Amino acid sequence: MGNPEFRIFNTMTKQMEVFKPKIPGKVGMYVCGVTAYDFSHVGHARAYVAFDLLYRYLQHLGYEVNYVRNFTDVDDKIIRRANELGVDPLSLSRRFSKEFLDDMADLQCLPPTHEPRVSDHMSQIKDMIVQIIHNGCAYVVDGDVYFSVDKFSGYGRLSGRKLEDNQAGARVAIDPRKKHLADFALWKSAKPGEPSWDSPWGPGRPGWHIECSAMSSHYLSPSFDIHGGGMDLIFPHHENEIAQSCAACSASNVSYWMHNGFVTVNNGKMSKSQGNFLTIREVFKLYHPLALRYFLISTHYQSTVNYSIKQLEEASNKFFDIYQALYKCEMAFSPFREESLKDEITPDIQKCIDKFRTDFQNSMANDLNTHDVVKVLLEDVLKAIKTVLDLLEKNEQQPWMIQSLIALEKEVKSVLTILGLMSSSTYSEVLSQLKDKALNRAGLTEEQLLQVIEERTSARHMKDYTSSDLVRDVLSSKGGIMLMDLPDGTTTWRPCVLVDRSDLTGVQLLELIEETVRAKKKPKDSNSDQLIDVVASKGILPMDSTENKEA
Image (cartoon, rainbow, N blue to C red; front, top):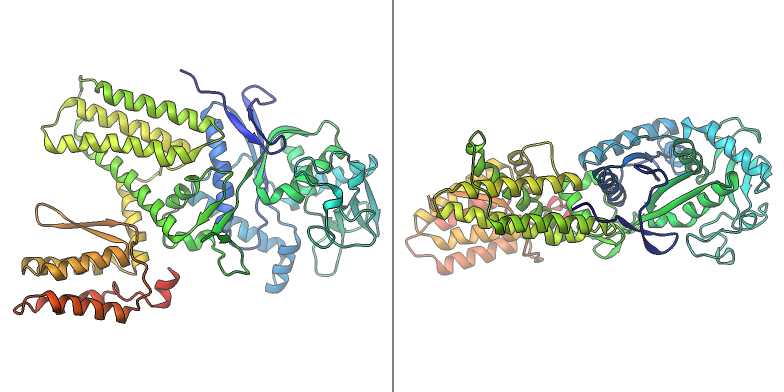
């Protein structure tokens, strides 16, 4: 059975539409990139993971995709920041463009086909402005060039706004020289301390919106398939893009406008002013990059993503489950790779795989519904893997079991690749990386944790189960580390979700544990006090330090 028709929500028409490219087999896609003057934040990650997912899925469908994502390296914010630091604006932008690309690589976002910079496309920008003026849709005032919005009858059709809705001083600059308060700058005359380029109107630099019109036209032609960006770009940026592109070329047309939702923090708007602004790098210090990607695609790309430590921990934990299941599959069937296994998988397993494949195709074709893929479909197939693994542990290995695990692992791996969640590292390496991040969150080294486990094992041998249980519970609730006692007497561990977020200080928590142990331990048992001292010395219990609060 072939793939179902790919349907996407078009912001322009406000409805779902079947995707049909202008040229069969080929797709032209433009996504507005970052203004590079600082480290990128989680909102950037949300946008570019979403469109990387679209890029990957279109390639999966067999399309040849020309994906263009620009860098804004000439902008008021860049100039302001460069002046504060006393550096060249273009040098500052180059630095943070490189940092952005490093973040995208860690998130496994594929490199676009083209990544143009504004500073490298001044001739295309100026040519487009000349054409807009020639067509009577722009005017020059003292070296500045403004687009005349009342000359474009379709202005507002993307956002649904009317010209009279625009408030001076809100999203549009107050300038008495403008013919209409909504008129926007195509070219800004040079000012002291700012980079400038020669133009027919005198030295200056481009306004914000014109760059994307010029570069998308240059790399994709005036008429292409998909234009994307965050919902905050619908107005004024994309609305102005449409106006100036159509004013420059009557054949200008974008078939589908796609926009991703916002990111909030603990259900509040993410912003620097509220102190809840999170860079991608800050998240990477404590969480695996692919755990962040998994978290972001767990919500449909159009919906608002609420960033919270709890939800990111839950996503990281689920991501660990996926790789642990795949690792166990690999360990189970790796001894049989060279053997010829004749048994086929059971009808139930084949039915599970067929359903997983079909449901995945249907979900992705439904406007990239990754929420259902991550929250439902992957969960179901992991249950099937666990069922077979449990049978392997309880019974003698049967060829059908190995064949089933091989088939299930292959199917999950294929889906993870399309989702951008398939690491180039081995399953074992990814699990190790996830555990390292968990240790960072707990403020522990592996050596410290292993020593605590050793002391806890000693307590168990002394039959001081009260102390051993307390250490296990505190590690889980306060450190996000789950200890698992195995039948052979050894103890292993894995990351887990914090369950106790009480406001107890480290001292109060220690006093509580000491009182509990002393109330329950046997009189002859002196190991409890020793164990509590060891645990406290390893930094597990005190949670009131500045570092742990920030983590």
